Image 1: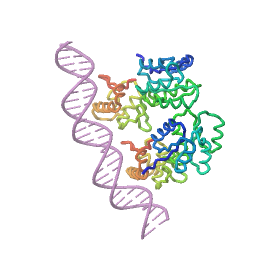
Image 2: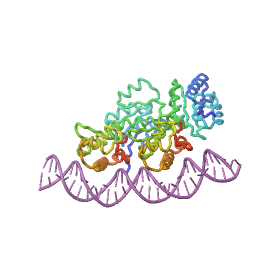
Image 3: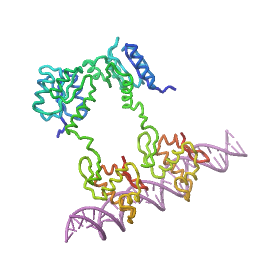
Length: 223
Length: 223
DNA sequence: ACATTTGTTAATAAATTGTTAAGTTTTATA
DNA sequence: TATAAAACTTAACAATTTATTAACAAATGT
């Protein structure tokens, strides 16, 4: 199985494409290199599932923005243009041709990888950190973890809320009981433990990582 | 003792090297200036413990990327290339020669310092002051040492807190017992010793440096 | 009446803590 | 400075406390 995302790199300067290719390979992508505009188009034709295309502007056969325009006619794949000089003219043409990003030489290959990943994120090709983690909504009594809704019972939800809204702070079982059950609750404080256990299970990995037992004191949501 | 980190600056334009040197000096570094490529190599030869090397590309004798390549052959010291024009050729050669960063003239010396420090941080040459030393948080019952969380038990944490919040002051075992255990604790005061030992172990080096025994009296957190 | 949630209990597991005792270091003093 | 006494350190152990888990019973809502 090879599920690595493909990145097409087109530059007539082999040392540049090799350099860029190396960085993307190191970052876990599969790279396809072309050395002129016509070849770039051919490679794209064979790999329309590519995750992104990086085009140098100055290339023989067909220049970068010609290639860009032709790809754009058939695909919305993210396109990044490389240019030697930050000239307004080139920039304009490039964007008009439908490029998504502009990277001016000299550039740091590491930065180029980051920019491409930003575009992939935009297209949901790679996971967005934004919808990672936990969201809690008192109004709807719902909690989302990594974009998926959790099936929590009321008590579980309220305990989670209480800890979540006071992240970092340690609460004793008694404090949790009076916050969630009410000050007049007569029950055993082991009850809290049971709920914590259930909550942890439902939160999976995230639960064990963030709902911490503070031995001898109680529980906390660790940031 | 002079523990300042050394920065080698090579530029054939004295005004530039003087300017850059001033900024690094102001930031607490020691600078070594060379005015051509050959000299840069010679200086590096005498100072292979330099923390970073800043090379102008256009230099007499040996140009920047020749110097870069030669240094790279023997050292992984961070190398920053300075270039007047964002030319593709220079760019390429520089990265190929193993430079870590590229800074295009005109540049702000302050920014250059920042970039260099980012590289030093990457190589752990300078510590991030943000997470230096000890932090104690009663709310979350956590103690951080140099950015890492300590796994302290309640008693350990409270003893540490007590000493930490009264830095410099000496406490007898009895005082510590009544502060942490409560005035009615009936146990042996050797108990405190055990906890101190465990605390010291968990605090490692920092522990032995700061938690001091005052013979015949008790303990203190020494500043 | 059914399924779901909630509370309780008890067995088990885990961690903290206090104590002891042997070994060091420090201090006082002869 | 040698020696003894006092004070401290350390490690190991056992006792204790505390937490987890699962299974079950009660309550709740549909």
